[in-house]
Amino acid sequence: MVAPDAESNMIIQAYKHNGTLHRVWKSTTILKRTETTVIGANDKTLVTESDGRTWITREPAICYFHAQQWFNVIGMLRNDGIYFYCNISSPFLMEENVLKYIDYDLDLKIYPDMTFSLLDEDEYEQHKKWMHYPKKLDKILYGQIEQLKSWVRQRKGPFAPGFIDHWYERFLTYRW
Image 1 (cartoon, rainbow, N blue to C red):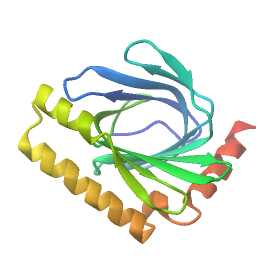
Image 2 (tube, rainbow, N blue to C red; image 1 turned 180 degrees about the vertical axis):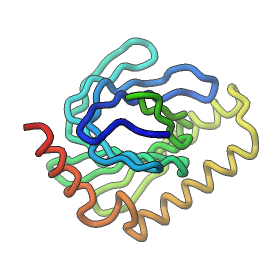
Image 3 (cartoon, rainbow, N blue to C red; image 1 turned 135 degrees about the vertical axis):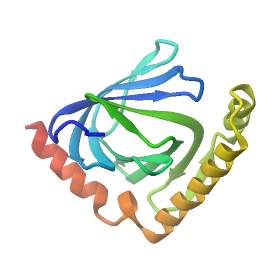
Image 4 (cartoon, rainbow, N blue to C red; image 1 turned 90 degrees about the horizontal axis):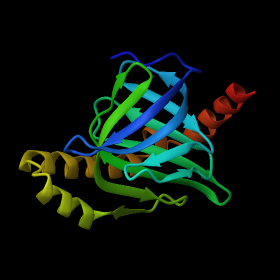
């Protein structure tokens, strides 16, 4: 898997377990790429939902994707601090300039004080029944939630002090 070069743009596509397209972010600037990670940024980017509705993101965001982790992390820069929205998902894959992953409904929202809430468990339970998630997948996803919480507590990866600010500053240099 090879991601496009830094400073180029990529499209992000989230799918559901049954293969249906869930959500598309039209343009995200790649800030760094390796064989296992992609760090991107966007601001006021167009997002299209599966039902055709569209909306524009409200604030700058730094996106962290890892090819060996079952989650991705969005750090949103708001006036009152950095909020993180973590999608419990399949590891990503790249096809040309499109980053793809499967969204498994569960989300971890992290507040500027680094407290967190697990979201959408009811949606996950509905989709688990409807799309017949295997028991092994359930174990993987809940295990990844615990790993993600551990990263938050340890201030590891995208939760490290200065991580989001560093990549946002880099993003600002690419925009001009």
